[in-house]
Length: 279
Ligand code: GUN
Image (tube, rainbow, N blue to C red; front, side, top):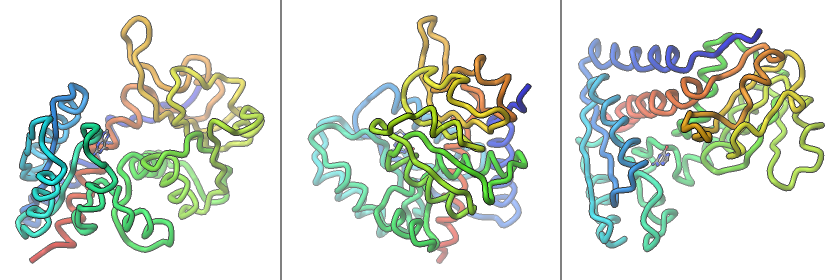
């Protein structure tokens, strides 16, 4: 029987700590959230970010731009917000419409306001151990592990997935925690053999219920980054929870595991942004 790592509870702790700081220190923190177009999933994510801001006492400025906005117009808005001292964090919701160059837009955000941690300067800083914003999902996973008492130092950590937003920063954070890190991806040979070595297995593979107990060492800690809807419209992760849970020592559920941590860490990054841009 595994310990179920409760992402809802831990994310609430992180948000409550932010809320307490805002209140105690009388902080005025502002996050600008830009959405281009009306992608329904993006609208849900943006709505959840606004709600979290409201809960904590962070002011959120919503920029809802039409799909046909030009890249030039979007860059002009980002530049205006970069220069605005009353704005501490800037978030451009992805994906952007196909006529825009996402990399160019991300690079236009001031690294001091890059609360998503996607700017190349933020990623570079992480890779050489310098201070900077860290991508919210991997930062949230570190908090889940720390706050559940999972030791990382000297442990074998296997990450499945090498995306810029999850896999790569996750590997860098795990190295920072002194874990021995292996990153697997679609070209990895003998995946099961590699994942079976893991004391901590972090799965961001993008395939529903892909990871069964055959991939997992007895007593491993299993972190599931995936989120999908199964044939019955129920949410599930990349890990077959019912199959893996009996042999894991700890495991995150879907929903209620990694998911809630992403927004909590975004809020945490906004607090940090306030510190960087304080007048
Ligand atoms: N789209 C899906 N997840 C994210 C995220 O964490 N940040 C941004 N900016 N866009 C996203």
